[in-house]
Length: 116
Image 1 (cartoon, one colour):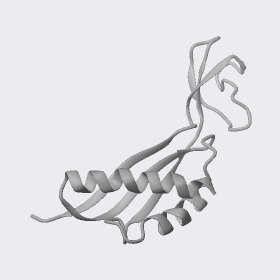
Image 2: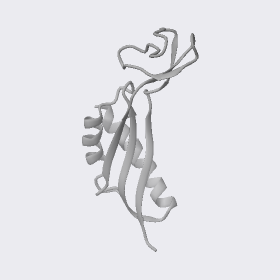
Image 3: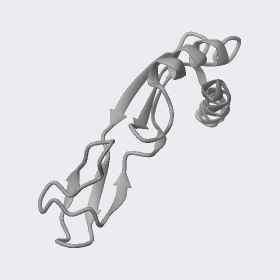
């Protein structure tokens, strides 16, 4: 399950951010997952529960936001949302497109608890 190694890397990033901001703990972590990223959100959430144990994020909640694919059409120049199984331009129907969103895994937000 590669989601566990992804979460271990995610925890490393979150731990570094918490250290940098002198946080006592991390309350939540928000991750954006593209539909074409090859990552299963539910498995990632389960792996996060395992990876966070004994860290500054021990009680943190993981919020996942699924990102639909977006393409840029090389024919008409439009940017549009596309189906994961068919990266066609939704404006002209062309198949000469370039994926511009939907294959990413992004640490979007970290909510930390800090002393005043």
